Length: 325
Image (cartoon, rainbow, N blue to C red; front, side, top):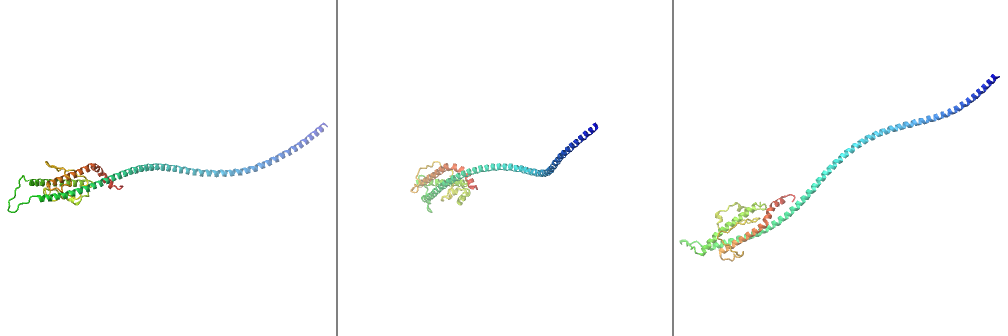
């Protein structure tokens, strides 16, 4: 009975344990099914994640390739930027040099404008001086023409007043030293020869000065050239022919040549007085007075204009011959 009781207890316990085991197995299989479903869900999610990962890897590879291309483009752009910087620096240096040249050209242009203005002023001054000299030369020429005519008239009057040679067969009449006509004619003849020689010498000096001056080179008249080429001889200096002075007068004042000899007296006589004078000696003194007046005019013109002309001779030649003028 005890054994049966024990056997019954053991069977009951075994039944309970089988029941518990079945119950536990059912629970376990339920949990296992849940886990299997979760695992399948996770597996599906994993597959999806792998596809997404592959896509991301492909995108990463594309991004790497694009990054490499971008790096290459960046290197090219960096090199181009360096070249552009170098060109910009070169252009800035060239611009600075050009600006320096422009400033130099501006300064040179301003200096040339100043020089041109100064040259124009000098040219105007030269024109005024030349006009004044032409006026003075015309007046001097008129005075010399008048003097030449009066000189010829004096010669004619002296020749008319000279003693005539004796007739054939008559002994020559020896004039007395106390004869006033003989003394006057001798003094007048001697003074006339001296005056004519000195006037010729003065004209030679004027022609030489004109030929040496810049304004007179190449502008001498043919008569002046012939007069300059022919040296004065004693016979021509003492002849009684009219004055053969050049028709063109010097452009610059001649140096005054003193013509007064020892013992000569120069009374002050009006310039228009010798035409009405009946005395040849008075006419000769009047001619000397006119020569003095002409020399005074020359001296005054020379004092006023010689310094200006000497200073402007070279300037006038340069300004007139310069292409920019």
